[in-house]
Image 1: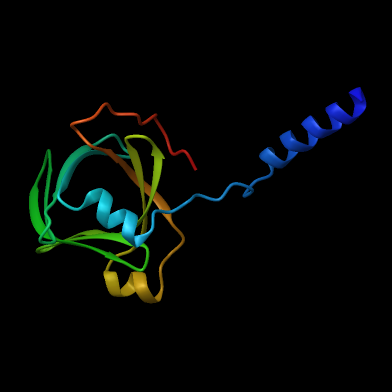
Image 2: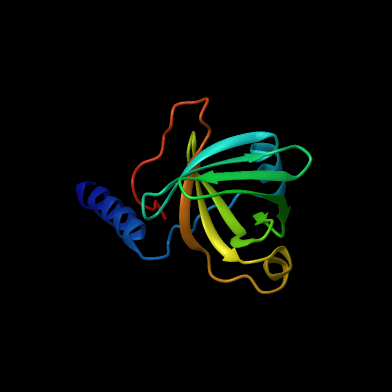
Length: 144
């Protein structure tokens, strides 16, 4: 019995350690719209720079960081959350994963909504965000 128990535990540990065994669970179109529509987030890029973004119900987005303020449009397309700014090419489309209760990870996949629908890139972790009216539950670093 003891050898069987150790074999089972060892097998479970080995499965958990296999690279690529745990794939991120991306939020769906419905989840993205319901979660972010009409809300604001505070966020932090991988380099530590902070930002604030508001996603109005009408599809407009308002972005602010230490260096600039931008307006534009947000949308949900092909499983991605897109923020496209007026006259500013720094936006794009992201796969989003809810990392914890009030922490969302944004993984860049495309510069435009059309590109997200046709030829998205491999998701690349870019930032994390959280709702400012709730306790932040993010931890440092990428969780996937």
